[in-house]
Picture 1 (spheres, rainbow, N blue to C red):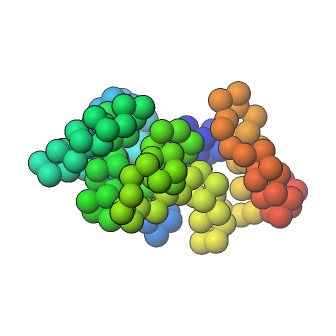
Picture 2: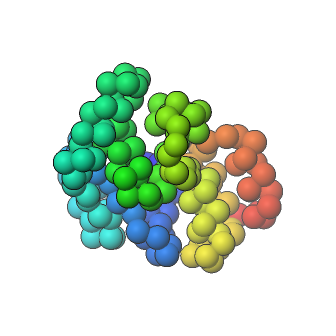
Length: 160
């Protein structure tokens, strides 16, 4: 997700939204430390440590759902305990929450397209810039966004 936003030159804009963005300390250490991580911290990314109870919950979730990475289990435990929305693309974490593998949770799940919609709704970036960003994002071979949803947004946003 962050890679998509970086490809679309939208990272700085992300932190202009009226939301707090955070990652777990494990996720930060494994996937974001270095130049990108330093940049994200400067922009306002928060790095959260798990409480002992959240760590125990993450361990249980990981044992019950072996398809999840340890980082995903940590993220799930924090989102569940703190009742905060979660940003996740396709994959095990999203299936866990949306697919109903874990019941009785109240975790809202959002994706990259939701973030782009937020950038539009909050008028953080212009429609033309969003169209341009979407084109840059989908041009990358590792893009996982729905082609149909991307086309709908570009059509609605207008020409670049």
